[in-house]
Amino acid sequence: MRIFDPHIHMTSRTTDDYTAMYDAGVRALVEPSFWLGQPRTSPASFYDYFDSLLGWEPFRAAQHGIAHHCTIALNPKEAGDPRCVPVLDELPRYLVKDGVVAVGEIGYDSMTPAEDTALAAQLQLAADHGLPALVHTPHRDKAKGLTRTLDVLRESALPPERVLLDHLNETTVDEAAASGCWMGFSIYPDTKMDEQRMVRLLRLHGTERVLVNSAADWGRSDPLKTRAVGEAMLAAGFGDDEVDRVLWRNPVAFYGQSGRLELDRPELVRPGTGPDSGAQGPAASATHEGNSILRGGG
Image 1 (spheres, rainbow, N blue to C red):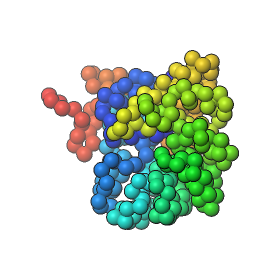
Image 2: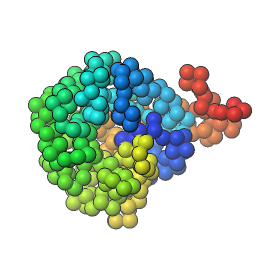
Image 3: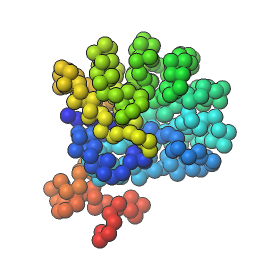
Image 4: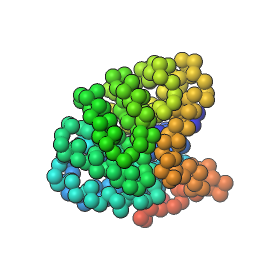
């Protein structure tokens, strides 16, 4: 089973997670820029974070045989903070980078006028840069938030086939499907969706334009939930091709619209498996900014 996790926050995860993900079949992922839990007080802290998504995290992922891509944006949680709004002016210099495959996460948190402005501005940036957009639907008042999101989308220059509406559930899937946008579902241990609910939705709506992600972050979450969905699909009678479509081909098709997916890079060799690797493998012998990740005797 090959897996592309289209939404996971590896900044919050450990190298053990990378190992477990590889063993579960994950070979590619997208890490959206998001709220780190602690409010940021300066735009400069965003820029260091964006740089890590473009440098450090791809390096870590490559050492575990996983292709890492990212999305860049001013996230909805902080879009209403006037200290953070200047980030919008700096986004264009990041959106031209090779590893950036979409503008995101954008959307709503509390559905304020400031969030309206940030969403509209970033949808325009996506259109200007030829990128798709990853749109976060709010965790509160989800149905109302989706309707408001779609109103802004209809006024934007970005066509629905270049938009992924994420964090959907049973209350929002019908409206999302009718919009023509791609549909994302986050699978969590306690909140959002679980794998059995996801299987029921797939039976009702099919596998077209559907992406499943773990959205694993610093909270109680599980980076192997994508694999759990694949196994639940097989147990429910879905075929291998349908599982592959949801877990691999759909994410590739959506983010491939950026023209920047790189899934077969030669450095994606899991440590210890390369032909000339010895104990560590080619990827593990490299460094990023002088850091090899190795500790102790290395």
